[in-house]
Length: 216
Length: 216
Image (cartoon, rainbow over all chains, first blue to last red; front, side):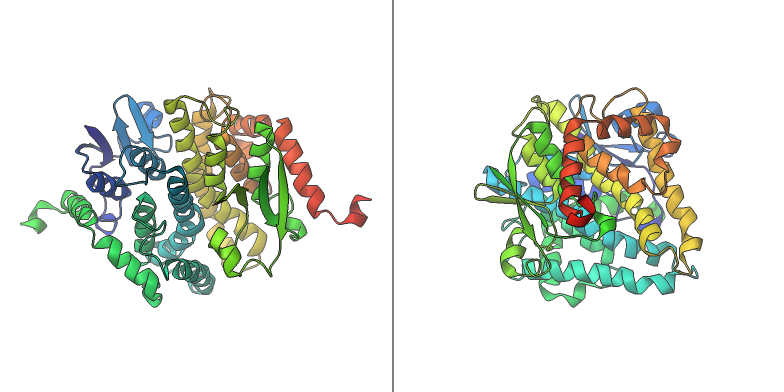
């Protein structure tokens, strides 16, 4: 049984976007049961937790005596255990691995910069002046993705953990709606988020962070 | 023989910082010979190149019929071929893999945001107002690294490709000199950049981008 460490509580704007979603989704796709370990600000700075997660973040996936941190590394680890997450042939795995790194290093930083400014710094005097460049950078990546996805259902041909990462990265643009300008990207995101494993993972995360009175 | 694709020419400020440096370094550590394929702006947008590198960037590493893109994926691929780059045991490889993703997804975006603003947007009206927050984010990551490196020579204990990534990420702070405030991080960076394979890789990249008249 895997143990997934995540936050006990997050502010409402973060509900549905905590990175354990990526791991929950992968575990659901693979049909792997897991339990939660919930932490808060009191655990994050402790040496014991830093030994598992040097930056004090979540998620961490405990697999026996091995504690894996970084959502990308966790998904690669799970991918080695289930063909539902990564193809069995070396070339197919490598292709998916390239797209995992692409999602996290060539795409996410640009989308995150735009999303974070819109969410947290919209009213800063400099935000208006800076935004066109942020949007331009995000649109450039979206155009590259559009070309790649024009004749593919998933990044590496078949569904892999790379699609889990890219979908959560695309969700950073939910507010700006930039992805909706690109039909193949829009359809790809819809295809990924329609998967039962994603719906279940998202519902489970939202249920954790929805106050009991609101859920009643 | 591997073939490494990189740019034929870059502006002087980029010399020594093109991402093929990561791959050159890994190939030197492993004693793997390689040849260069040099491209320019005329190749980057072509469908043939996009099939190898969907974002039109460098590096790409050709290994037989397999073309690997994303420096992280390339280093993981090479790590599977040489114990000089990744330890042979599964847990050791996983630990290094976590640090590879950490370097690229939990550290690089923060350092890059600061470095890019200092390099390209220093004179923007908003840059002064925004900078303290960028510096704060970078310092936070450096403090986390400092704690981890206090009693370790390398991120995963022994030298791995994760150190190649983290060192090139730390070099983004060369201008701001933020890393020099953290003794363990400073010593770690010095330890990594003193390795003969790094010196050779850097010298080779600089030689490519140094105009012949300046080198004469």
